[in-house]
Length: 193
Length: 40
Figure (spheres, rainbow over the protein chains, first blue to last red):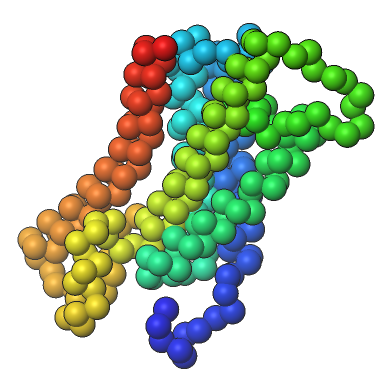
């Protein structure tokens, strides 16, 4: 958006909010489908080692965390109407930033489990719950693995939202294109998705 | 935008890039986590 006559206040919050809501909705749907087909276990044993994690659980968690945010970033960039990859990707990133505190709020309310099993690390002990978890080797391993899974899910969401924004800009998703783009003779960005 | 066979070929290539990103990222991670699960 180098053209000054096209300049708009930035970021475009309405697009970002709708993108964030879309990401949450799709994440919820994929998470609930995961429960419906038995990929997640609501009260299963805690993850103390990766060996116990089934493949379908991994698929649903990775797919849910990724594609929910792909949709979120795509929706935000399409509503904002970006034709350049960079502002579109940045708006995708802003969508992710908006959803992180929302997910933490859901986790505090106990609703983050519906998104899949990997957001458990967002859940602390709420201040109004007087409950001290038992300490021990197993608990420490579970806490470590839960944190690892949550970090993975969150970062995967960031990657997804940025990719979704990039996709929505309609510019080719290849690096070589951006070396030629500023040479002037390049055609208008094509809308591929 | 040019038309004809070249443009359609380019569009197909762009679509291929989109698919490669959308499938490549999650599949890579799933395979990686699967290998970690086997290894431990």
